[in-house]
Image (cartoon, rainbow, N blue to C red):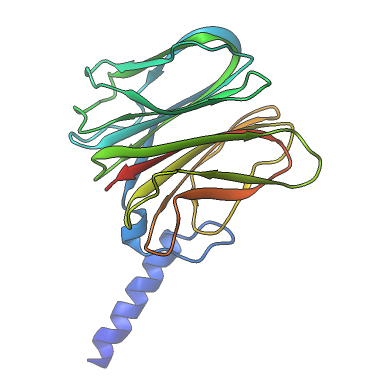
Length: 238
């Protein structure tokens, strides 16, 4: 029995080494991370445009969900649309535009048909001078529940980031946040948020984070920022 316990402990240590927690956070249980599968496509360009095509870089499993996070710079009000070559349906689930014409939005598609390397997504928008886009695959998400949005102006000192979904969250829900920011470092979020790789163009950043809620956690994004920021937030049913 002692030998079995020693072997189990060694395996646990090896797994933890291969899957470290983000800096400043305590390691999560594997089940807390299992919802996110991969980033299947991404793009960031300093170019005046009204849309782009994104090649699928990672195959998507049938029945999974896709979340598209988008940040537009120097843009206007108008329709943003997301389609793909597999015919999946995308809905805008959160959207915010700040007074400086920066816009951040989230789209979701559930129970998707599979996507492969020869597939692509097409995203169109009103005229914008820059764009940041990331497409994330999640497993086990069935529907969008609630949304929130907010923004804050530029300041050299730390300002609070706060956006809460009025309808709240049930324990186990997944909350996803897209934060667009400019003229400062990346936002610092309170512990518990899992950060995905940031997209950056000069001083413009798109930060994407997610977390599972529990009975003791509200459906609120909190943190601090020294930059101008806007955030779109959505809760998703697991």
